[in-house]
Length: 213
Image (cartoon, rainbow, N blue to C red; front, side):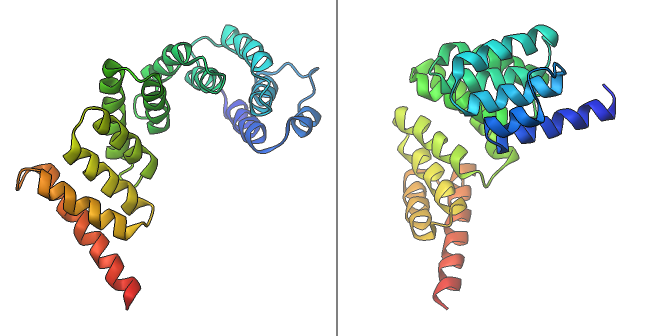
């Protein structure tokens, strides 16, 4: 696609997410059948919680461009919000197949797996969340979801470590310090996770001292 088309789609996506449906329809009336216009209307319709209509529009977009990973990502998002979690999985998986380094999609897919609440899905969620925190070590939400997974697996040490990282990322330094100390007590000395917990403890302690001075 040429740069103009990519620019038009980016603007359409932003308008779809930032403006109310009424405003989007002024910019992109239904008579405009360009992909960019349809994309904007679909996003705005989804944000207005008219999921049935958004899904109908989404099917049209995917018929036009069946391999577009951003369309599959949006389909997954709509299905998730609509409560159709099982159907959201393949949509997100198709998006990730094309965009394997896109951490936002890994995070969204992990969230679906966690919401479905099955042991095998928790294993899958863990894989995707590890990718997210490697790319975005300060992503507090990803660490919180990891804590949920570890908690379900009765892994108290790693639950404490994930909560420590989540709290540190959110600026909740005293909670981070307590979680990091707990993690170190439960983890084997000098392992990678124990060293990580020690790093969180030192960072939290440093921040607390700076705040108190």
